[in-house]
Amino acid sequence: KKLHDLELTRMISLQTAPQIRLVQGNDTQMVEKKSFLPPGWQRLLLGTVLAALAGNILVRLIPWPERWMISYGEVQTAERMSRSYYLALTLAAAPMMEEAVFRLGIYGLLRRKLRPKAAAFLSALAFGFYHGNMIQGLYAFLLGFVLAWGYEKCPWGKYRMAVLMHAAANGAALLAFG
Image: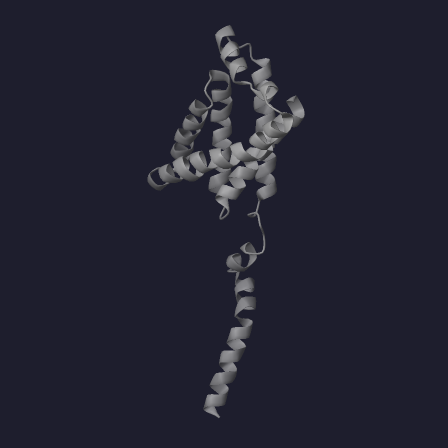
């Protein structure tokens, strides 16, 4: 009788444990594995798209010094490559490679030693310098902060989310400004 009662108790415990975790709010592991993207991904994408559009509007409104405009024009290579190659580079290859270096690599390493804002500042600074001229550098520096924010906010899928955010920023700029 006692062995039967113990076995019955064990079976009931195993069957009700997931429901108990759900009621207690300890269901994060169960919920997270069901989705490809982390919770709040819509807000992160919207924030990135709005930041990209605002940054591109500012780039067009600010009266930049002539030497900065010449440097900016030199790196605009869209007219020198096919449209499909440019889209693949802008919407897929660049976000994957740049996020691997700047968020997964640089931000991830800095984050182990520094607070989020300091790590975001330094990785965004590196991202800005990487873009090669003052105009794109300033824009990329600010966007780098947004991308680090998204990377930091994700409980999992950080790299995937950063790539998606980066691609969304590039896509929004392409759609709005060509």
